[in-house]
Length: 172
Image (cartoon, rainbow, N blue to C red; front, side, top):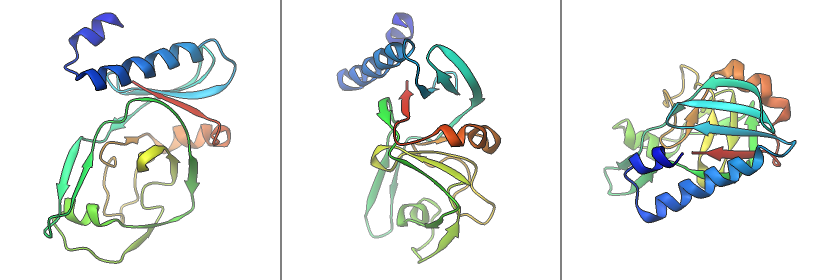
């Protein structure tokens, strides 16, 4: 871990978040609760019970980006790192397409709603970051939401019943 951290180009604040997330993750290895870990360098998500890996899958990490609308509004999506508790989960929902997505796609804002627009399964994290499955073809979002995480639908569906607002998520 020391070698990995030494090779990273991080500010003091980013390094602190990285260390906090990794230390919390190491502590969770001794527990007996289900939790998720996302290794952004390896691009893997693991569903774990203590030290045991119950399921592992590839994860696509949404790009870091700043999006500017024609009217000057800006949205910045930075990589999420650290230890969190899931705030909720969504499936079979209607998604109101946000203005930042129209700006990202170079289109004027519209009032559009898409069924399961972020993907069939969505785990909600803080500050509107998410873990989601691939969006449907009719969604204007194709690929991972900026700064968030996209995993295969079959993998998130398999662990879906175990995900709750008690589920810890470790991102490093």
